[in-house]
Structure formats: structure tokens, C-alpha cells
Length: 145
Image 1 (tube, rainbow, N blue to C red):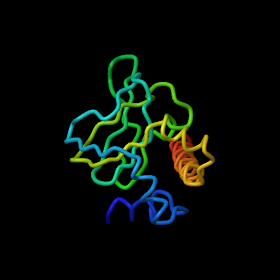
Image 2 (image 1 turned 90 degrees about the vertical axis):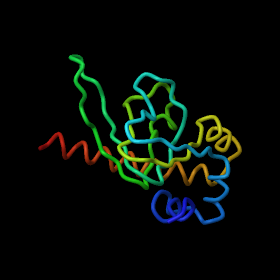
Image 3 (image 1 turned 135 degrees about the horizontal axis):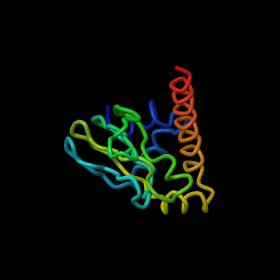
Image 4 (image 1 turned 30 degrees about the vertical axis):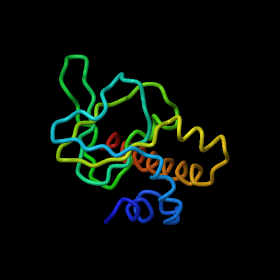
């Protein structure tokens, strides 16, 4: 599955192929190897990541220095959705479990699209809301257990 297909069929199903191509044209390609840190707690948030290949571990450090695994995410998925919406700093460390290929849409590019009333940006925002809602539901289930 290529990047465009992953966006249209899995990550943002409301985008047409042409819209997905337009969106991805404004992103940067990144590759990280196993064990490499993609995002570190406390760093300035930089945007939304489209994970197309590989898997990552999302974790936070406790007060005693131990790490708590929050999630293991497999491609294709989105990362940094909170950063895209509210900015600020990174709320969890993301470390590659395997070789990963990603694309990043910077927050400033996303905000520029919103300012231009770009329909693609609004469709992406809908996909981000869906990801956030699914993660809240999983958190609720975890808390109840």
C-alpha cells in the first residue's frame, strides 16, 4: 500500500486521492530505525506524523524514573494529533520499535491551510478527531479494567 492509498483508505477516508496527494506534497519524509526517539516529552510540538511503515512505542516517565508504556502503534496511523490541534510541548515519548517511514505535516503548514479555508485541512481535522475519540475510548476501557 502506498502513502496515498494509506491516507485515503485508512487514515482520512474522506479525502479523495487528489486531495491526499495535495496534502502529502506539503509534508517531509522521515525514516527512523529501531530504538530511535521520534519525539521526546517536553520538546516543542512540531506537527502531525503519518506513520506509513513500522511500529512505535508511546511512553511516559514516572516520577521514580521508570517508564510506563501508553501504547504500541502499528502503521498506518497518525501521531502527534494533540500537538497539531493545541500546540505546546510533546506529551509522550515516541520510540521506533522497527524501521519506520513517516511523513510530517508541520503545525504551521496546517494552520496556513486552515487560514485559507482549505477543505483538505478540515477533512484532516475530522480524521484527527476520530483518532482522538478512539484513543479516549480505549483509555476509558483501560481505566474501568
